[in-house]
Image (cartoon, rainbow, N blue to C red; front, side):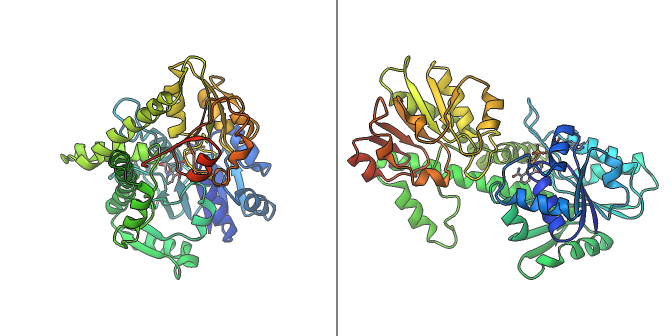
Amino acid sequence: MQIGIIGTGYVGLPTGVGLAELGHKVICIDRELSKIEKLQRGEVTLFEDGLEELLKKNLKNGNISFTTSMQEGVAGADIVLIAVGTPPHPVTKEADMKYVHAAATELAQYLDGYTVIATKSTVPVGTGDDIEMLISKRNPEAKFDVVSLPEFLREGFAVYDFFNPDRIVIGTDSDKAKEVLTELYKPFAEKSRILFVKRRSSETIKYASNAFLAMKIHYINEMADFCEKAHADIDEVAKGMGLDSRIGNKFLNPGPGYGGSCFPKDTHAMYFMAKQNGVELTLIDAAIKGNEKRKQNIAEKIIAKVSNVKNAKIAVLGLAFKGGTDDCRESPAMEIITELLKSEMKIIAYDPKGMANAKELLDDKICYADDMYSVAHGADILVILTEWDDFKSYDLSRIASTMRTKNIFDTRNLLNCDIANKLGFSYCRIGN
Ligand code: NAD
């Protein structure tokens, strides 16, 4: 099949590369020329395990190409995927649809023959109707169906998730579109559940899922707060809870709050969307407010653990919003650091992949270390903010004599408490 993909970000790029690997002819479109030029050279514009190899392979065999031209990507395509951003509106926090609407309006004029327009972006319920209207208005002759095709990949596992989706949700009532997408997802038919639903149900499934996961994280964080007061251990509590198959053991890791480019914006968008429909989502509201407060609370706890705040040097391990990605958008680390900077503390940080993106957000307000051990040199406290695998095997004996104060705040509960204590560290973790 010939597939055009609009937007080459964290969703569009792995999806495009994955579809090319399956043998489709994929043309990825992005309006950022510098991104397109890099991708044309076979250089990835974001970090995802295994992505670069597949990109290079499929560039070489001609299955994937990159362009800034909408016409090149859309004309003649069987399927056009919209994978542009839907950021929160700065004031209302509803999903800002300007990129989706612009893409729909722009692509309309280049449609030729029957085309399935599938929305991979996370969009409010009813967006499919809006896209349909925008396209018909711009090109009344166009033959097309608009389908909701929400994306469930996890950043850090995007390539794996592309080839091993646990479910594929397809929102459409059109038999013709169903036929095209059944063909597209044929390679997954045996191992994944393919669910055909109404377009509006599909749009809602994505928000309802993300909001649920965000609430699960918020729940375990509140339980961690309780454990701290009640002298229980959240790791033991989470393990005991997770053994119940009705609860499941995923998303029960306490931490500094959820972040990233999806959960914060999607909880807000879901709340806003429900309110517009006259429904008050009180659980989501509580998660949003609690999660925002949490990052402030963590910053306060860090400050409380440092004796001389004015001259304190804080070493931070982890800037990305989670391990396995370079994405720092809405990362708890960014917000906690911003909070700490108000106290004029000196901050030095290290992240295996996220430092370039963090620099764009924080400029030179903090310093950056070359590796995960030198970051602790002369520090008054070492704070772990991202759950990178590398940090789990952190050798504390290597920093025991280089820190000014042997002080650790592990907000991801990665390190071994007994080892830390034996080496003379004051070791603090979440929910214990
Ligand atoms: P992103 O910001 O990384 O990428 C979006 C890309 O679209 C950018 O490169 C931008 O230049 C391009 N773009 C915007 N308007 C364009 C236009 N008119 N023509 C061509 N290119 C255009 O965003 P993302 O993280 O990939 O997210 C995309 C959507 O997918 C969002 O709605 C998001 O909520 C959803 N989503 C994201 C994830 C994730 O893990 N990041 C997972 C599931 C769903």
